[in-house]
Length: 127
Image (cartoon, rainbow, N blue to C red; front, side, top):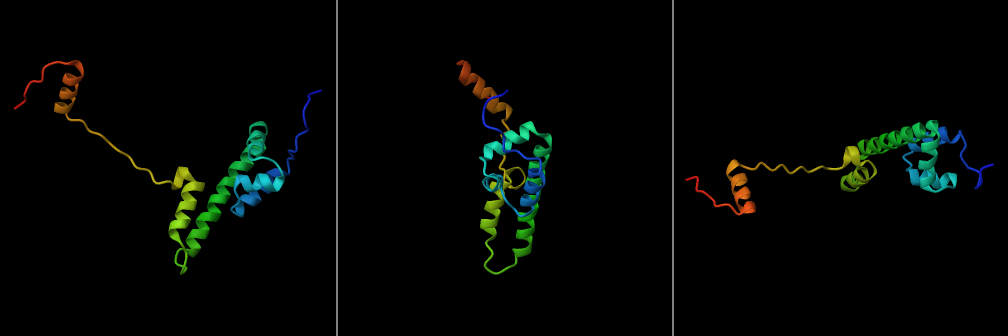
């Protein structure tokens, strides 16, 4: 007989977490509502496929909620698009975080110069 405390996991939580996601609730809010730690939700998701799917569906529904909210209120006087955008980038970084990309294109002359400096070889003028 395995030791430890019995799990609080219930299969009926699956539909509840999806419904809470539809209300824009986060995993932390959901964990508090159930009365467990957020990490417990992750643990349940790793042990119960149906709960893992429910968590992903809840996250997707949560994003829909917040996107709809922004769309509905973007023209409302007093609506803070900056605050809403920050909320979105923090909640949904994969799709909403601004990405900056730095591309470096080294010319042949620069590469030759760098090789010469790093190896201590003499530098020949290309002029």
